[in-house]
Length: 277
Image 1 (cartoon, rainbow, N blue to C red):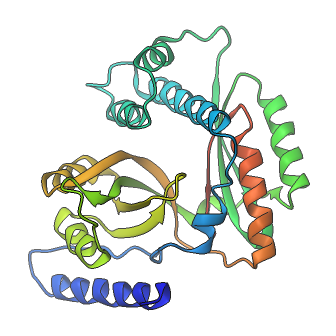
Image 2: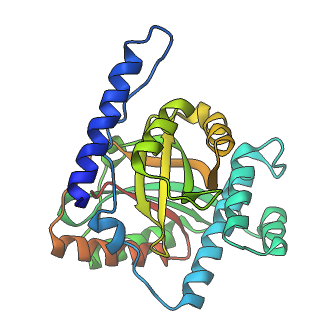
């Protein structure tokens, strides 16, 4: 079965499940506006490969920034700061050394750091949200503007309206017994766990993964239910999920991939969200 046919079937089955549950007086399901991602071309193109050591260094740098941001927003105690607890688990799943995790949590910045969210337009009219953590806003702003201009983008108000902040539980494409989790089964588990949507994607190593999307207050509950039925949780946290997708040509997609790579390599950028289909 082709990817297109598989996604069409998955979308149909999901809607059938939704109609069944919506008719049930005791069930409330909110359908997500985001389409199933599948193994689309963008999920392959955007993970621009580089030397493994360089990729690992950049990954740990971004995880360190996520830890600092979580501490800044909710304090250094993971028992009282669920976002920090989720980031710590993500760090462990990526084999980040414990000493590095603790150093990031306990770090005392010499200069005060600021969090900011930049809204931008990318190639093909795509929307980007660029989260930064910096001790010099002017320096970072100039760097972001330079990278956007160089790769066909610009800062633009309004991009935030194309996203919703959601809880996201990322799980392996295989369950704890090593069996592949097919989309039909993922859809059923998503509904039972209280998730709004499930997307099939590839991680940086081109391995299959599933992203279960849910309302922010239900993140912990959804994660626990998915783990209880044998799924392998890789991470759980808050992300900006697009409500409107942008369709790009192959050329625009290549340009967007270069832009995202440049932004992600910027030392002050925590993460970048896009709405490219």
